[in-house]
Length: 93
Ligand code: SF4
Ligand code: SF4
Image 1 (cartoon, rainbow, N blue to C red):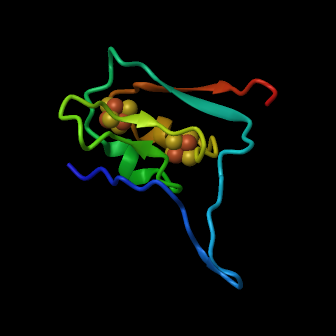
Image 2 (cartoon, protein in one colour; image 1 turned 90 degrees about the horizontal axis):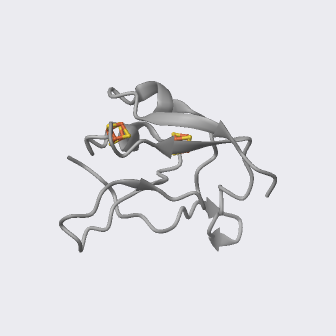
């Protein structure tokens, strides 16, 4: 299983490396049903902004979504083999 412990998305721009808070706005957000989720990390492989996280220092840590980066694209919902992710409309932020 590959789960990346990436804390920042840091593209290279004119001003050098900078951090993008890609989850600042979105229309929908993913919610993981912990009863259905098997922690397989398939969703992490498909997420275009690498919003899936796991605490690598905690062996019991389960995968979760860092909403600071999630764009609400819904790819994880489609790709989850267990149908454990549901997109719900985002509240006004
Ligand atoms: S793909 Fe689905 S079952 Fe696998 S870790 Fe993600 S939410 Fe859980
Ligand atoms: S909705 Fe899109 S951006 Fe958000 S966690 Fe799922 S795949 Fe990643």
